[in-house]
Amino acid sequence: MRAPTWTIVLSAAVAALVLGAVFMARGGGWTVDGALEGVRITARWAFPWFILAWSASSLARLWPGGWRSALLRRRRAIGLAFAANHFVHLGFIVLAAGVFAMPLSPVSVIGGGITYAMIAAMAATSSDAAVRWMGRARWKILHAVGGWMVLLVFTNSYVGRLGEKPWLAIPAVGLIALALLVRVAATLKGRLSGPAAPATL
Image (cartoon, rainbow, N blue to C red; front, side, top):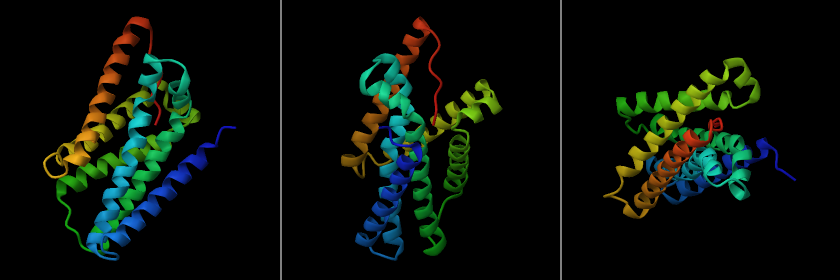
């Protein structure tokens, strides 16, 4: 029996909240250091959800059947779970900055704000009704641009930690590189065999 989308999204968000609270308690409790631990762990928790959603179509095109096709069928739920997770992450950022006065650079505020607006737009349009309302071409542009923006944010974050936390950054950067290779290979195969499946967050 297939789990409803809302149960996957809710479970992922609750897990993010629990992880954030546990790491906050371990990292200093109700302090800026504790809040930053919540920020870090929720970002790390959201990352694999994004990679799975972003890679689902490419994996299914390259290797149809099996778990790849199952992943593609649940791509919308996985993408929405990522969005829910990342808004929990935003909650910990707001806590650190708004309650504990952690400084935020204008670049982080503007860039992060635009990216979160795109995530919200993708989540709000992750339905068949939204595809019909927007038209498939415009819908695909929104989700493609949003997906690349999120990938760029994660890439910038993990590449910037290669020197400081190689144990964390190297696997993450490697996974991003692998996801890009899979996307390129699927695109090349699609040009030879027909149109690609629509991407869905």
